Image 1 (cartoon, rainbow, N blue to C red):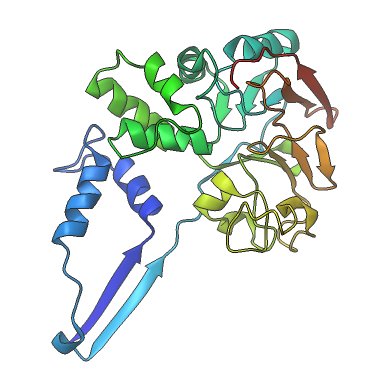
Image 2 (cartoon, helix red, strand yellow):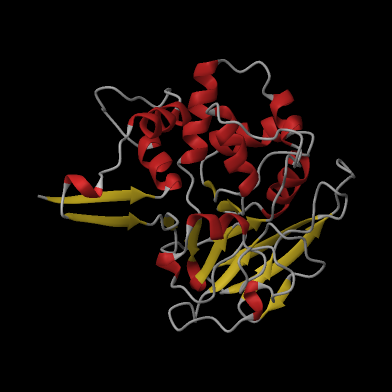
Amino acid sequence: IRVIEFKVNRYLAEYRIAHRKDHPSISSSDNIAAILQSYDRLYQSVLKSETENVETIKIPFYAPIQDLSDFEGTELVIGDPHGCFDEVKAAIDEFKPDRVIIAGDLNDRGPKSRELIDFVRSTPNIYCVMGNHDHKFMRWLRGNKVNTSLGGLNTTIEQFSDYTDEQKAELAQWIGSLPLIIKLPGNRVVVHAGVNPERPLEKQYFDTCLYIRHHGGKAMDDESFPRWYEYEPCDELKGYHILFGHAIHDKANVSKWATSLDMGAVYGTGLRVEFYDTKVGSSTIKQYPTQIYYK
């Protein structure tokens, strides 16, 4: 008897459940956290005494990629808005781009997370990668235990206080469908936090795209190691230019292969955007003033 045991990354398990269609017993409105907890509770690992051959295969979860590189026109890439809906609208109204891409973190801390999310969901040609705040909000919508006092999630929960269970499930499903990497014309790539400079774009891990700041240590926020973009990218990453948010930077051009779009909008330091015209192949960085919404 040969037993093969698959150990699937938990993020991958959640992603697969959320994207199942026409399943006989699971729907998008079900509590994904409860499904996984039930599985963990009921599953019995194979004992060595039960077979002479047990093989464990670990299944990693590589970040989902949306390829939007086959496009001609103008596009506006917006750094972490965190509910700064008025400023986002001001940038879009000024540039009037053919499409918009947001670098994640639609919600938390700002005054209009709900308006911004509703706008993104209902407006054609607006795309968004998932940020760590979006992911945390999704987990709360699904019923997972999360700390609502950290990161400003409580401000988002308050704005969605009248949502029914069905509406929460639908919103969680939408957030869960967001890619973590978007490829754009000109070999530009949008990701929320960044990438591992030693791995190809197609083999970036889910949590790396959400959380990385520094690279080389056990933790992705270990300040004793350099920022991820300070390394020379591996051969498979060379040629790409990464547009990212997550970590606040005073300047946009942080390295030859990366541009920071996070200025910390909710702290009154501004909203940073990149305008790109595929016909010309040139980009313009602009900053919009913001109010102090969060301290």
